[in-house]
Image (tube, rainbow, N blue to C red):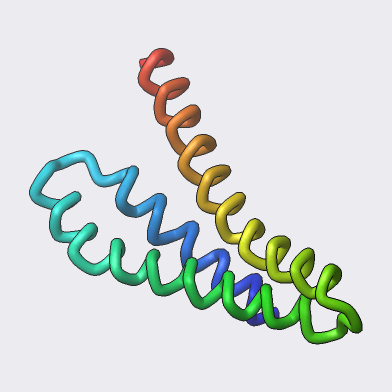
Length: 95
């Protein structure tokens, strides 16, 4: 449950940056959102890597667990950016 909350918090921060229309508001939001996003991604990657690698018995599986733990936040970040950009583009064309 904690991982879901962390990921939803990250997505909300990222969408807040993307959805801000005025430059002044975007700068105000980014002032707090960017450090929070970096911290969230770093913490999430570390916790995921630790959780996946903790049950392994050999170095190969530990490396795979760590790689998967690092990949999940990176994929969430990429999917959020791409999905939000496509949504905004589709709505801009419809208007």
